[in-house]
Image (tube, rainbow, N blue to C red; front, side, top):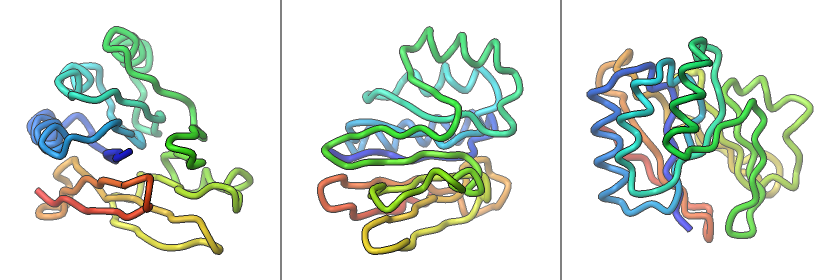
Length: 162
């Protein structure tokens, strides 16, 4: 199972359209958004994904009523962090702010995903946990827009800059 990881789109509709194009071309099985979508109209662009999308809410997702309505309308699945799915036999933990790992991140989590910092992060924590943040997609840091793909079979990550 290959998952797409995206964070901090901050309502940049042009970038979100490119993200959808990249994930569809990569034929990912599922997409995870690690928060800071900001507005419902962004969900309408994500509706063109060929894969289901799950995620968590971030600190800038303040238009919650309209955002949640759009998420439900598109059949997406979003949660307050931490979100702890088990996919392909792997235990994941998804938060927006890495500080939200505190008290929740355990050695049994094999993949820990976050956003918020707008910075790329790929590191090992303990013996088996990969912590990954592909960075930002909002265009705030020109030339650093990126999304990630994680193969849950191997936990190999790939960074796609655009």
